[in-house]
Image (tube, rainbow, N blue to C red):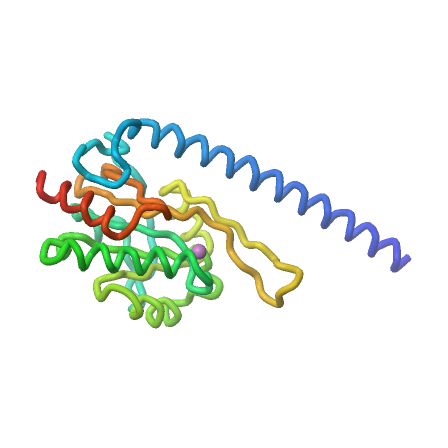
Length: 220
Ligand code: NI
């Protein structure tokens, strides 16, 4: 009897895993298509310069969110309204990509110089379970002094990620004791009017970013 229950349980788990995987694949494909369509607007735009000031979206991008910053203060999208923003979603346990991208944001901000005070860099966790306010506080310290770390309840994080079209999923690695997170890696550059001005990807350097940001700030 016990064995049967065990088999049934495993069966259900496998089914659930397959469904989860399928869902992840569908969600991933959907996002890839969306971003491909979005980025198609940039066709012909030189990737490494900001000479052509064509935003990715003409409409407001993102949406309402309620999160907690790395000092423990509750914040909403209204706290950042009217500002230029660099938004990155990731998690502090990320071994390579997240710290690289956040270091890139930091370098780009430094390259932009004095005018970078008009830009709010934001790091939103997709791993609220481990990324507590304290963890976020310690982590953002390693990057730009104006970087704001944002966490929240799993529901709040889900809502924020959805608003910004970020895919993320918890991945249990059998060879590790802990889990890791799969997530999209985009640095969103958003204007004061909430238009998505540019999506910086892993292949864009800090110099590329600074050039584009400079051009947008100069065109104000
Ligand atoms: Ni990461």
